[in-house]
Image (cartoon, rainbow, N blue to C red; front, side, top):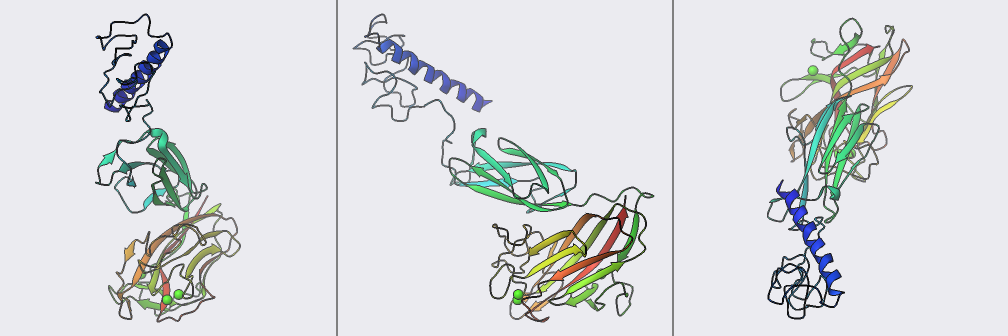
Length: 377
Ligand SMILES: [Ca+2]
Ligand SMILES: [Ca+2]
Ligand SMILES: [Ca+2]
């Protein structure tokens, strides 16, 4: 409410300036006496003509040293022009806050959420910035519907996948970003969908079943978590047959990225991970880094102009116990959920890692765990 009042007061001051200009054009006639600074007209001896005092630096229109003038003056350099666009103090930083204030916002398909942008001055104090000053954009409009309203935006998850929303404050050019992951829809109610494959690799078998093209099972140094891996620069296939009648597949898994993943770095990278169905579509294709100082494209796609610190969006960081050289424990766990239209009775799921830039299993490797596939209507 106080901001609203401020705008109204400024507008009134500007109106007073227009009035003063009009009266000056009449040659000073028809006003009030020179000693009446509150008078509605102007005169040669009336420094306060036009309604405000001559020495008021915050005044909206007239001045003491310019009795014939209309609206501006040498003593009023800070005059309010009646447009509350520029914040009182310069914007030094802009931030986006999401519900729960996570580093990356997670939505389900069809789910809505509201995020808020805030401008701060150099001292870290929040600033009130005009609603017209904010510009919102989203990298991938297939993944997210965005409806901005001033310093807030409403997001609606569209397709499963990842994207980044940006907000920019016009007077300063300050920008903030927030990665957003849209998960596949929750599984339909029992009776309408069938879980056609699940595997957490904890059944004690030395190898995974023949549905997998690579069958090595390992246990993590920390926690002894069994998973399919370690794998190198190669493609892992999961072949499913005799699927029940369905219209789409819901696919969930954890991806273990072990040791020296280099993200988008040239020379030692780019290190990408891709997930697709053998006959399409591609559901994930991005670079990943296990080092904060080496940037990755995820949650953006491979080749994205915007890059992120290593391990952005990871569910776990450095929890598996894999030690890389002198760096110490270097690994991450990502959880992915994808939905793909699919009707055939057979499916081949492909987990693909950079075949062009091998550095060896001791340098960078990977695996999968907690794989779940659901055939849904
Ligand atoms: Ca496991
Ligand atoms: Ca490496
Ligand atoms: Ca590499």
